[in-house]
Image: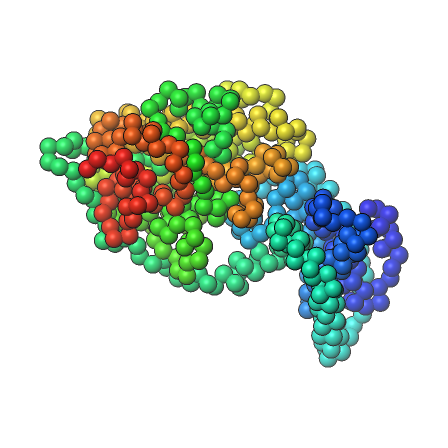
Length: 552
Ligand SMILES: [Zn+2]
């Protein structure tokens, strides 16, 4: 890599054209190491034909990058534009090589929504070295080159001509290898998200310019006709209290309740819970899944929506319930905008927040106080509390568990996973599931203490799963169409107190006989409304998975 760099350093560019060409070639080759790694691994591509196809593919990328850069080829904008592209390519290359992820719209969205703490988790020497080699060193060279001054018209003519030439070279070359290219993109869809830095730019465009499909402005009201249907007279007069635990990065297959060979759920195993084994997530990332989970639309319609709508929590509030969101993560992704909410992740409570990050149990420390602030007339009708976990958020799994929960050893203690073998990574991950198991049993324990005044229930669902080295993939966020089941099969667990069973007419005994039924995040909105006996025109009975066990 260094040899290559010195070779480049002897070139003395005469004009912006040389800078653009050097950058484009550099990005096509070294900014796309992850793409070339996948390319070489494709069995159909081999021999001289494969080499020619690879060169043509690289030429298409280089020409497209050049075309893009010629738009910015002005005295004050070219070097900044080159720097941005180099940095985008370097960061993406690192994550793609390291974790087998790809850069698509939801990945870009996640980067925008990542808070400082999450970013700090992902810093590593490997990342630093990749960014220095692929972006910083070439950028230093670029910034040292003089730019020849041209008149406005001369520069404009030159930019337009070279933009056109680059574009035509890209099109022409693509034409030559179109058959190979089309079949490669069809059989290896994920590779189109590996083309640097066009993938990141496309992601940013989709989120900004092309995102106008979903109209801006306040969300459309939803379920304003909602009301609570009351039980027969003489029934238990205690109002319902539901805790909805929104899990993070928990995958179904690592729960011993779902058949995992390691005992990761010792605490929940002692409670009368139902663990559903075949629940599909709406997306493969927090930013994608969370808004979809609370929506009435279901995955397909949610992706094609033209408006934002109010969500499940708004409807519960319209029905008259007290609703509260407690967040121990990076925020509620606009789902708690119209309901009381607090964030506990930055509290300084010593027993829960020793390492600068608060354990999920901190939410139970605050729950009584926060509920007591909700309007009493609403609480008399019933309460729904969302607890948004930090859960198994990676790659720094080891940071999510206190020492007493590090049952599976040795544990990977490297924030980037690069220094660990797969067993150590799985150990660290399983420890987070063990801690979530404890946390959920604490939630149930707390609910039992509320039984004097309320009938209580818990519903736990994770937002998406996680890859832990299967097919060399780590983390999550793959485009849904190519995502492996590890990233899309999530745990869902219910616990209903006997009083709540009477209130909802749903029995745990019956639910347990339905635990292997295929379900998805699409069911959540309607199931929670059904469980809480909310009557509204937006409720769909056939999507309520509790309905099969209702005996009204
Ligand atoms: Zn998530």
